[in-house]
Amino acid sequence: MGKILELKSIYAGYNDEVILKDVSLEICDDDFIGIIGPNGGGKTTLLNVILGLIKPMKGTIEFFDTISPGHNNRIGYLPQINEIDRKFPITVKEVVLSGLIYGSKALIKYSKPDKAKANETLDRLGICDISRSTIGELSGGQMQKVLLARALVSSPRLLILDEPNTFVDNQFEGELYEFLKELNNEMSIVIVSHDVGTISTYIKTIACVNRGLHYHNSNKITEEQLASYNCPIKLITHGEVPHTVLKKHDH
Ligand SMILES: Nc1ncnc2c1ncn2[C@@H]1O[C@H](COP(=O)(O)OP(=O)(O)O)[C@@H](O)[C@H]1O
Ligand SMILES: [Mg+2]
Image (cartoon, rainbow, N blue to C red; front, side):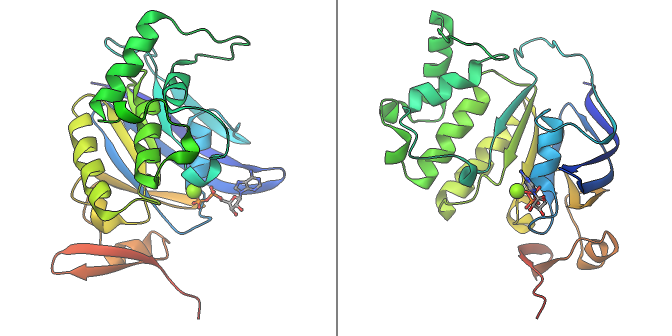
């Protein structure tokens, strides 16, 4: 058990526009962090910083102990689905295998163990039967499973998911969260969701991201706390458990 990575006072954005301001966050083994916040608040940008896809303007990001037993790759990533071109003619198997590319290889040739690992991961997610389908043929739920398989195929120490509940039905969503709970015994998880109510029983802690970041060291959060964290989302509570989070309307 230990620290996986630490962000210290990160400023990041695009071109000259600063989106994230003074963001600090520590991610450790065993964590299950839910990232919530309004649309455009900078949640995906934060993930991009963690993944090294954008370079911070200011601040530091430090990774600890890159090689840990049983884990080949540091981070598995499930991107937000609307950022993926579904018309791209690639099969499910190829998508899953692409989770095993380290660095940039000009010519990719997968080894036998790579292919075995891909099959094993497809099997674990119960989607062997669609391995030869192209991604354009898949339903939303199937697509999320394929992306999850891709993120998991490298046995990462940290799994990051960006709104995996988009375009899926309730049954799949429940299944997904149960599976993540089980996976949390093997790896740390960071999940972006606009629905803190549903994820609150699975996550351990909450990070509110709205340009800044406020870390909440519990899976229970009240509307007063959200307001004090400058996180303009609304909780609809049913009894004690928050049920749904909606964006606050301006009008
Ligand atoms: N590639 C990009 N180039 C320029 N601006 C971007 C880019 N991606 C996101 N943004 C802007 O950064 C802000 C935060 O976006 P994002 O991190 O995607 O928010 P969230 O994931 O919380 O909805 C938004 O105002 C968005 O328009
Ligand atoms: Mg986003």
